[in-house]
Length: 133
Image 1 (cartoon, rainbow, N blue to C red):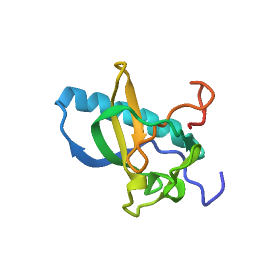
Image 2: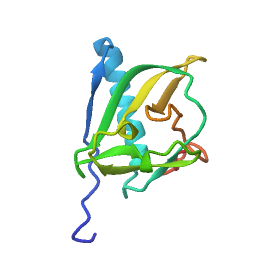
Image 3: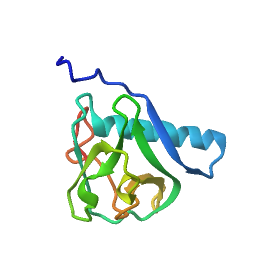
């Protein structure tokens, strides 16, 4: 490991307004942490945000900060484009660094950006290290 690289640390800080029961909140936090770790991988690689609209009711809107890197999850260049890159970047407070977690119209869970309201999902399956789009 190079001197400038840090070992992966899965600690995560979530900043946002919460209107959930304690049990449901814990479930959402665990889901968000799982999604964040999946997006960042062990190397801090970037992912891609899908362009499909998020037909979801947000239960939690938050900013995700990796405590190991002190960077937030964001959509690169505040993009509205299909296949926009999701990455870690310095904290700057834009809407491209705000994500929502909620339920969709078929009873599932949706993870979406608050900038474009587009869903984030695995690109080529659900295997370990899969990119997102």
